[in-house]
Amino acid sequence: MDFRSDNVAGAAPEILKALTEGAAGAVSSYGADPVTERLSEKMSALFGREVATFPVATGTAANSLALSALCPPYGSVYCHRDAHIQVDECGAPEFYTGGAKLVLLDGPHGKIEPDRLTAALAQSGQGEVHHVQPAALSLTQATEAGTIYRPDEVAALSEIAHTHGMAVHMDGARFANAVAHLDCDPADLTWRAGVDALSFGATKNGCMAAEAVVFFDPEKARDFAFRRKRAGHLFSKSRFLSLQLDAYLEDGLWLRLASHANAQAVRLAEGLSALPGLELAHPVEANEIFVTLPAPVAEGLEEAGFRFYRWPDGTARLVMSFAADPAHIDAFLDTAGTLVGRERLRA
Image (cartoon, rainbow, N blue to C red; front, side, top):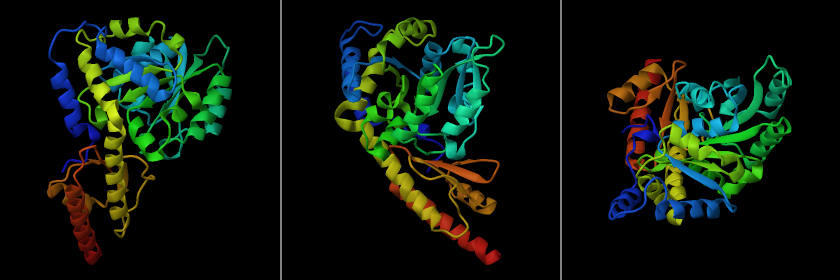
């Protein structure tokens, strides 16, 4: 009954089956195998245009290497204050870009607002030799608050960035959850809305260790193969990354897995919202729930065997995965209801 993260879940059976079946025989190494070629074709079909696709093993590598191709060492990357590249990647974006600066923006529910971005860029010192130069905007989809940028919101932010000569990167660690929630064409959330490069996540949604950097203009990826190799993310047996991503995209598996996680998050959120005194901190649009839990309720849930993260402000984060068990959600709600009732009697 572990709701700490979607990373705690294992791998989907379809992914493991693909790895087992694809492990036999000899194929060319370093990405020159038939599975990687097929994956490139699938990605182009998925987005409705020719894209350049580069499998890597981690989201940190995907984000940091993508930004290294979009931002020079003297540049700056604009992102939300709570973005993963700022909070959880141990300086990797700065390292791989050669020292680019992250410029942090506030915004409700984990989202950057156009007015804030415009105001920040007006004070950026663009063109001044004494200042880092705005080079990239990074958007997290779904956000660290579990909310989702709509296509028009992505387009509005991208237009501002492009007007200032910046590229647009999307951290799509939970991209599948966003697409499943909106039930839209993946192209509408990316290149049609102005995104130049996407970190296409899969590990959080059923893969074992596989992400991809996707460039919607292959020209922007002209030196990326060298960056990936230099960073140690060109696997000799690349087929094992590509096999995961290939199976992930086959017959809509990626969206089915994400839809299950989203549905369980909504189910849990609705149950918690019905309990007196519990409030959701953010809209539940993907697979993450942030809810205020009184300390005795949180402690009681932990004592009952449930695992989740507690923030210092009293908010608890609960994350549903592709493998979320509805029985665990029922048990969580039953236990929470009992504990809330007990607290109300004490009051």
